[in-house]
Picture 1 (cartoon, rainbow over the protein chains, first blue to last red):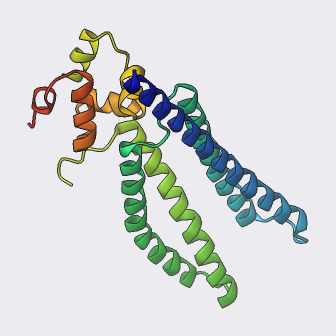
Picture 2 (tube, rainbow over the protein chains, first blue to last red):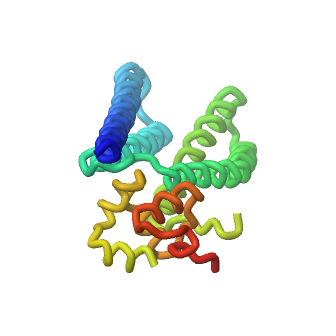
Length: 156
Length: 60
């Protein structure tokens, strides 16, 4: 009897955690969308290709955050854990892979900007913006890919 | 192995996942042999089937 009560309490705890996680993710998505809306509304210059590219990347990031929030809600609905040891390992592996790949991306980015004639302040801004968005995109794609194929950690 | 044991116990993937506190995808990858569980998870799964770890998980 005590064991059943314990299991029920544990499942309840997992559901609460999953719901909280979903709430955090939806809040983050709303915050990003709000900031983006504010930026578009506030800017006085007409939007160029770079701005549209940035908006596109931000929408992909928001989409990913909303998708993971929905997954957490679904887990809560089925009484499952939203984050377990496999999902944590996948996140860690995706983060480390994204970091390794981004080192080369930063180098290519800096080289490419050296080729084009951009003034130094804008150049620094561009390198940082492209680098950060690139890292996030690489992380999202690897994270989604590993979630589909799993991780073969035999050789890790 | 887990798939057969689960079928024997009439457990769905979701039910097993609920019992051991993981996501359903983790059970899917375990059944496909695409994920090596932690010692704790291996212990919890073996406990569900009332077997020893080495009877459920074979090191290949």
